[in-house]
Length: 70
Image 1: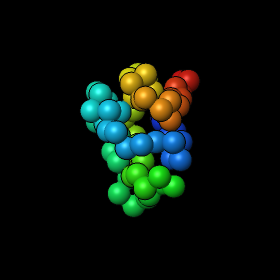
Image 2: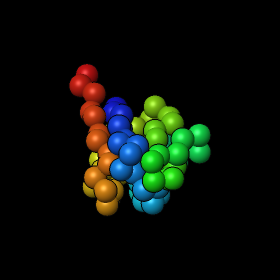
Image 3: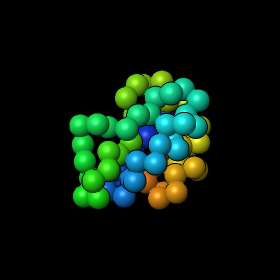
Image 4: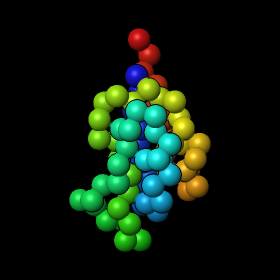
C-alpha cells in the first residue's frame, strides 16, 4: 500500500497522473485552485499500490510517492 503527496503549487493539472494510475485513485481536485489557476491532482481513494507511475510521468515533478512498510 502507499500514498501520494502532490505539491499543489506546481501541479499544472495536465491529468497525466490520472490517466496512468492503474488503480484509478487520483483525480483533479475541483475544490482547490492553485496560484496559477489550476485544479491540482489529489489521491481520493486508499487503494494506492505505490507503483510511482504518476510520479514518473509528471512533467512538473509535483508528485511524491510513499510506500508503507508492513
